[in-house]
Image (cartoon, rainbow, N blue to C red):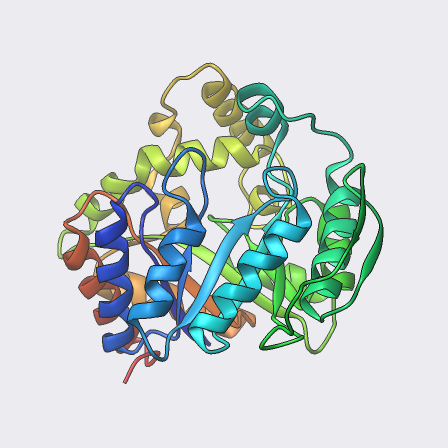
Amino acid sequence: MRIAYAPAGHRDARTAVDLARRAEDLGFAEVWLSEDYLERGAFAVAGAVAATTARVGIGLGVINPWTRHVALAAMECAALDEVSGGRLVIGLGASNQGWMEGRLGIPFARPISTLEAYTAALRRLLAGEVVREDVNGLPLDAALSFTPARPDVPVLLGVKGERALAVGARVADGLMLSVLSTPAYVRWIREQHPRPDLRLTAYAAFSCDDDGAAARDRVRSRTARFLGMHGASPITAVPGLPSARAEALRERLLAGADGADLVDDEVLRTFTLAGTRAEVTAGMHAFAEAGLDTLVVMDDGVSPAHEALDRAASCARAAGLLA
């Protein structure tokens, strides 16, 4: 299993680039940059990372079909792959109606079929083809004016519903599993979609401290929020979170209330890599045994930035994932 790092989206851009350089020096295989609205733009940060590193893979995780025309996404991705020397991994996701329509005013409909068509068109553009078809309701008749450095940039779909997972397993190089995915969920994905070459990457909420309780407390509210986003779904059901608890967390989220009191230590042990170094190391081993290809450790966004990264490296080294 490969180990990757994701700087918190609300870290300033310079800090994110510094963390990427440090992650490369520490031996991490990839750095993943999220594009959560309205935080720093992933392409600008990724370009700076590409220009100041030499080896580490650069993941975009994830961008969506609504905020970028597919031709623009192809232009940006091809340029980023070019400047990085072929180190880009593209993560695509459907986003959600609350953000796209409710907050940004972008019409949102048929997210899975839209994502599927967008993925196909993006891959064709990146392969240097002319695309003549409607994409997301807009007629496209275009091709890149240059030959992309790689015609087969890896594309992962960041999806979670059963239908969406099936589409991703069929049309993409792999799946980008949502934060709070568990080893049990990884095994379930492998059983549902037994494609030998399907690449599975997952974000993991991370917090490590000599005081395990303090580490868990740092991510308790954040975990409640993410569990509320997932609600009653395979991500929560497969590892055994009762549906009533999942729905209660979703109700708290929709009401704008903190659900931390609904997240006990057992829930945190199940859904996060939070605790002492020994506990986090054991969690990393469990992901590897479940068949995960790349584990993306998420910066907790609370600890001093370089301290969080160094603790992640220490855990990964103890797990045998870093030299």
